[in-house]
Length: 441
Image (cartoon, rainbow, N blue to C red; front, side):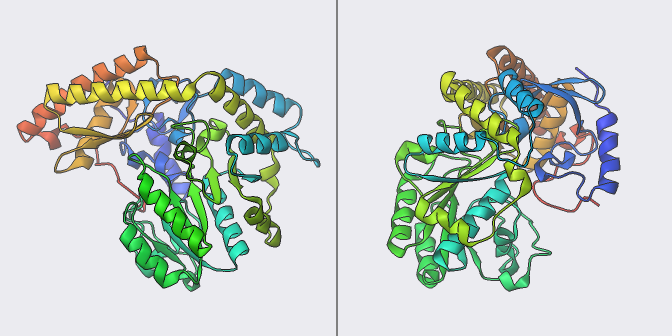
């Protein structure tokens, strides 16, 4: 077991916070979300589910796996080949790359209800495009939503009216500073599964509502009847229904998960796993609605860059060829089953939520953030990047998973004994991790 120490990555992170507001470009990769002061923070190399930090320390990644973007593992050789080929042949030119059309056709084939596709490079901007299209099509402005949908003005505007509107939508404490106050009241939240509140909100705003935006699921299985009822109400009121499947896509099937239950939206947004770590976002939908993109200006130079399209096409081929969905869910089920067994055997208070390919460890203690931080701290000493989330990939072999479970047994035992003797705080070697958005300095 390695001794916990401040490595080059942890020191570089302290420097980064002084010259990069927020430290980096993504909240979910902040060191404070894992192990403040000791998280390695930066990598030299990533392959499969293995990562080498700036000091050449080796870790197995049993945590967020590129924020869920790398279902096929890091640096997949086949995807590397097509990406390198795309770069060698020119990733940008004054003409369009043909892969853009190929990918549009492939996504329509996977989602037969759709017949039109636009592309972007990130999930947040893809959601913003979908909302812009819905507003352009309906000539209305209000958005009713549940779930997490990124950083753009249309979404954060809900916190102008009540700064706690987003607290139950994944990330608490998201400040709307910089969002025009004129957007107050244009975005209205509802809770997943709460059809009564949704109907009330819809009744009060249906004449002004352009779209309902929602995730199909996140940390639990979808409520099918809830989804069906919302779809029916949107159809009845001629409101554009947008499914954000940036996180849920490619976890239960190849493409968007809503296909499994034949509950089709008007627009669906895909990202993350679509490019297996290469930037690509897709907005797929019905042509009569999607054509409204031509009535608004939606355009960007790097949405035409070649690498994302090439990577996505090969990613989809591998998903279909190698039965990836079956494999990652089988591995996830194995991890979940054994985590719960270990918890029982060590008297560690744990529940495991989420679908098998995206597990959430629910530490059932009075101070779950303290327990999460200690868990991450002790697993890091044992050579694992670990947290309360596990995005499963095909790179997570049984051998690697068993090594993880062996380390977990030690850590669960350590925490359980410390808790029983009221010594948990003494195990902590640094500050407690953050749970959501907050200023770093």
